[in-house]
Length: 233
Image (tube, rainbow, N blue to C red; front, side):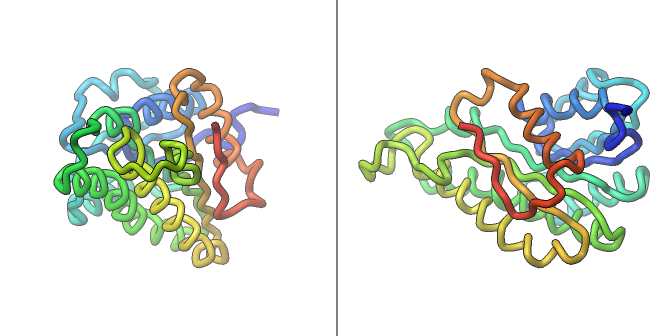
């Protein structure tokens, strides 16, 4: 059987392409001959990213202003007009960098709002832009990335709100889980699956696990599941 059977010629949008997760997944999908629509925040722009992917793939790279619905819709519309139906949507984020921003003495409202917008709000905006296209095409697969702290928290239950990777990460991760599971029931009957992958703190040490998890949700192997989170502790 052709190992690229499920992937070749499919169209995928990846949000957060310059994150470790985004780069890992984009390289995997490029090898499978998937056409890639890459979207990132203006603050993460990298003009060389397309050159690092296989030339035989169709690749479009767009950046958007964080929290700007018009920007997001325009980027998605351009990818859709060039590629056609969007088969996959993968939402990633800069988890490690988000953790590094928070110091034990700094959990300001400004930092909180910035993390919430860059992570949850942008996930919501790209979802609003892509899922209607999938419903119209009567098919598609959505994968959200969040972290295991959305289930476990951090700090051994001490209730401290200034620990690195604690309340801000747990809240964003939990919000993503709630958003994903809430929409799942609405879009399952319309042919669109939505599932998630929650990463533990050492996720960078084994990128193969990330690829394995993505393959489960995208390849068709996991089509029986919707609204499920695969936790990689």
